[in-house]
Amino acid sequence: MMKLIAVRHGKAAPGDDDLTRVLSQQGIEQAKERAESFTNHIVQLLLVSPATRAIETAKYVFPGVSPIVVPELYLPESVQDKLDCDAAFTKLGYATTRAYVEADTGWLHRWSWNAL
Image 1 (cartoon, rainbow, N blue to C red):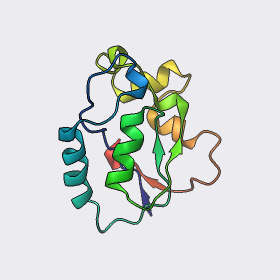
Image 2 (image 1 turned 90 degrees about the horizontal axis):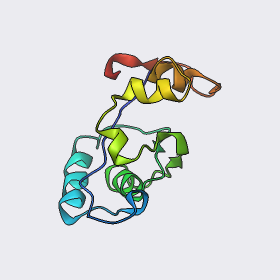
Image 3 (image 1 turned 135 degrees about the vertical axis):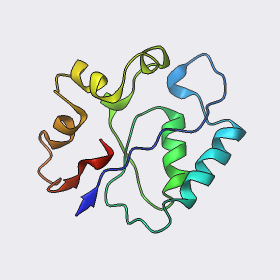
């Protein structure tokens, strides 16, 4: 059985363009600490938003795994603070996060949804 694990990006450095903000030193340390909890996990698929900090976090947490950038996973910071995950995917036309992952993804067969 596969599991779906959601990881929030580390703290980002300030910047004018939210999409291109990089991890701060604190964010890098957060990502490295988070990586320790995933050392025994086999990652088959790594989906990330196109936000630079999300891609950087993924590389620290799951080194050696090539992330797949999914543009729909990016929400500007002003929106992220106001929406939970299911509400964000509802805005994209899906009932829930689970519905998004299941839609048009024939390569996703069985998932453990206890994290959602």
